[in-house]
Image (cartoon, rainbow, N blue to C red; front, side, top):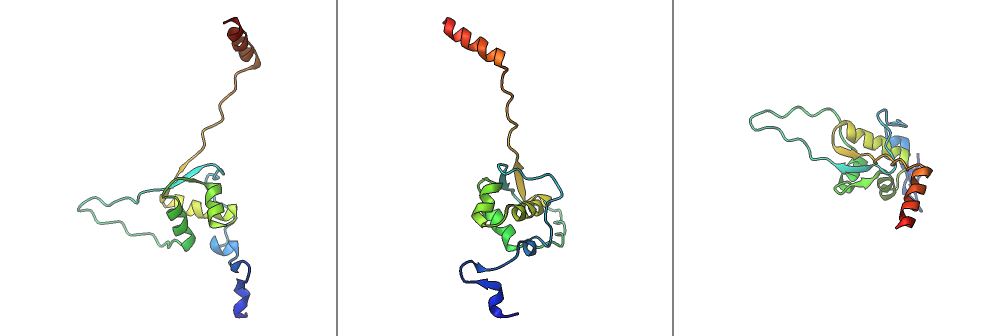
Length: 131
């Protein structure tokens, strides 16, 4: 393969999305909502006098590190994808990797409140008019 095959003059280095995720196309856990807030978690500290647990055989990639750096202040999944200029599906897989290792916290959006019925709204309007 020629040296220029992995470089696009307009876009820069070309890395296929499946290469960033190890061929995975989706996260097997809960789906990440576009507006869910992601924050970097504080790494757990070993208690004094206790040996630290052996680290699992997982080495985060540069994209994982970039996500952790971005998420020092909470950002939505959509903002992370935009800032990294990566497809949303890739970002969701990378976030899943970080969540599985407790390196991020996910704050899911609050459910949409139930709106009062039309009858209740009419009674409120009639009450206001009576004032």
